[in-house]
Each structure stands twice: as C-alpha cells, then as structure tokens.
Image (cartoon, rainbow, N blue to C red; front, side):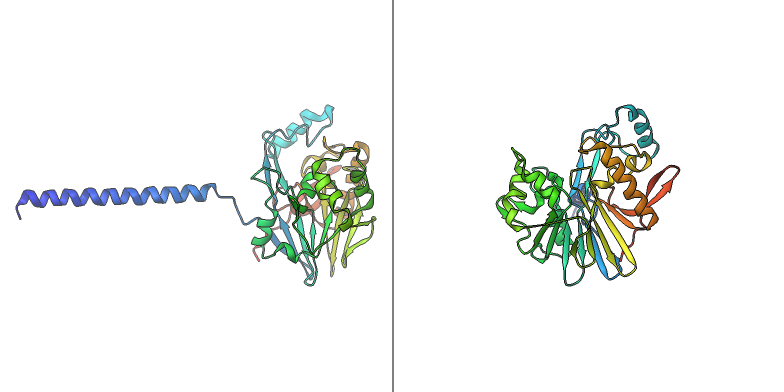
Length: 317
C-alpha cells in the first residue's frame, strides 16, 4: 500500500471516529436535557408516626400570578408582606403554589385526605394518582377519603369525568361544609361533578367525630364556612393536616392579622389560625400544610408575638 493511500485511510478513520464521538455527545446531551427537564422526586414523602405510616402526596405545583395580594390580602400591609417575602427568599412573582394531599396508612385501613385538582387541564397539577402509584398504592386500596372543604383544588381528584377515582372508598366531609356547597343556586362544575353527583356516597360528620380509628375531624372555620382539619394520633405521636387553615407558610404565621384573598370570613379565619397555631405549638404537633412548600411537614414554633414554620428533618427511610 502506498503512503498516500495509508494517509487517506487514516483521514477517513479519523473523520469517522470524530463523527461517531459527535453523535455520542449529541445523544448524551439529549439525555442530559431530558433529565434536566424531568420533575424532581417521585411525588411522595413517607414517614412513620407511631404505628401509622404517613405519606404526603404531591398533586403538583402551580406557578404563575403573584403572591400578593392573593396570599396576603390586607390592603394596608402589602409593603410589609413584600419585605417579609424578600427577606426569607420566598417567591413574590411568579407565585409558587403546592398542593399536598395526605395518605394515612394504619395497616388495615388507608385514609386519603383531599384529592387535588384532578383533570383541570393544567399538566403541572392533577398528579395525585401517578404519585400514589409511585408510593406503592392503587386507588382501589383507599378505604376512606376525607374532604377538608369544597374548593376545587381539594375535590376535583374525586372523579375523572364520569368515573370515580376511589370506587371502594367511603367519602366523608363536614356536614356544614357539604351543605353549603350543595345548596348553591348555581354550583360550579367542580361541585356538581364531585360533591352533588356523589351525594349518596358521602357520610357527613361533625367536628370532633372520628374519621377512622385514631383520626378525628377538627373544626377550623373561616377559610370556608365549615372547613375542617385532620388530627392523627398513634401511640404518643400526633400530627395535624391543617388543610387550608394553615394559610401561607410564612405570611400567615409571621403576621397574625394576615388573611388570604380566598378566605371567606376574614375575621374568623384570623381567630382560627391564631388558635390553631397556638395549639400546634403548645402540643408540639407535627403539621402538614396543604399549600406549604414540599414536603410540607414541620412544626409551629413561637416567634416574637407570632409564629414560624420549622420544616421537619428530612429522613430517607
């Protein structure tokens, strides 16, 4: 073989190798970008509470709009609230809103607290069933569903069109709350499809009633007329899912006068939150906030003349 032929072959081989490396690099970049755009985590956070297993389930996250005045509607406190959000590096705009239903697994009985937004058309939400599967559960496994209140982001996951998502579950809700929404002259589609259409499936309860063994309903009105939170007790441990009675994880705790734009009774909700935060602090309750930052588990501690939310220490097992 002549020298020029050897050089030609070397050139072709070098070019082929370079092209192969480039193709591999492009595939690697594509895979990297795919991973970079995938959501963090598997959408659930499991931990023990006495003999119970608690699973916080993300229904997703909404991003858009502004934090104020939605999460702090007091007209004379907008500058103060803005400063608080900025001081603690909390988003002002766009607003970031989490949706955190919760599963209580007592072994023989599985209770789901709230159901998320369901098929609302927003691909970033309605993730409950997917994340339930990630945690090792099927909708048919759920024995009881408790609804804290009738806002769409808590009830729409009950159904998927005309199909019920939890066909084996007993449905529970506070009597005052259910009757308020069911008696509307022009109920929303969310209420019509997920409450009124399922009215024969609902068992209506009162504050203090047992939801299942070890779990009771707690009256926390103000956000809505009959809003209820959920108290879970197992052994010497206790946890309260605040529902929306917790408000904003920062503004509602640091500023006792704070109310949300979507609170129905501003004076009552301020009173309720004050009492709720005091109880959680005094009894050292673990709490879960429906709209708190993921995974939304922590404690309420006194802070000056108000309170603060302290996230619980993350555990992997």
